[in-house]
Image 1 (cartoon, helix red, strand yellow):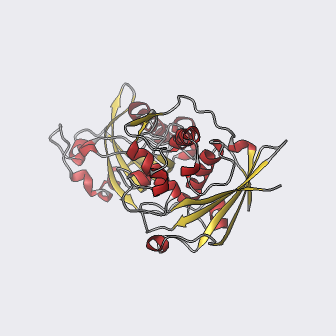
Image 2 (cartoon, one colour):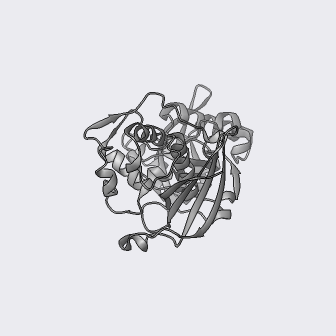
Image 3 (cartoon, helix red, strand yellow):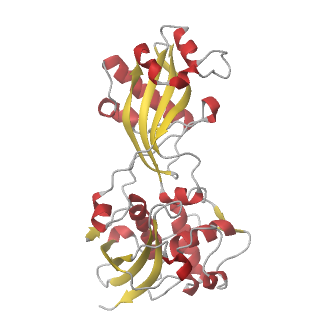
Length: 351
């Protein structure tokens, strides 16, 4: 399978996670204001306009969290008629300041409205490794709407339910027999591996220089939440373990070769403000294939890894191209916090 790389995955849509009643989150979408006419299923024109206004207010009020979410889709969003309120038992819960239940608040003024949105939320695989605060899936979000200056103002909100819904597998992932998480993560991994400029044979980052390792960390940190400025040693170990080891137990250990290499330092590692990648994946061509595993896995981790490997052949540059082969083991779903690839071996291919 051959794929011309673009700037990472088409990392779909950003999301808003808001904390409201009971400190519960609700997503919002920064692009909803411009696309509300097509994105929201509503019963009439006034409701359609209100839906766009709600999402826009949520976006402006609570901000975005792009680092933790890879997918955010509006499944349904509209104002709910009173005849529909019985569908949400949580309306019987009390508001913290009003002394009323949600239903009581709505019934106290006929002009008040209930806004309901169903959203599909999907975390990045790196966020899953770090431990997301909330579950992904189909979120049903309830929002209070109150008339204000000729429009509706957003009041409190709550997540009424989070239902499991497997994300549709991308065609590229399906063609290779990968999960969406595996496909997203290998894309992120290759961007950092190629970008750090280690275009030679190696079996572990312990064989890199300190400069190469630091550049890899800076590039890889772009896809890790909470690592924008500096990395603690536990951050470094978690990132290295996720990308170079089948281990899924304690996320603060790594291959002994890396720990003894001198590349890991105590304290916090400051990252360069604008790391310059040696090559951009936009300039590369990648060919993928699946084949039976050629490289053994330590006995204690053998059951955690699929019996096949993912091989990515990357052609870097055009005038004097460099061809690299990256061989990944695959952690399947249900073994650790996330299905993921991990790098087993890298080889420089002869022309």
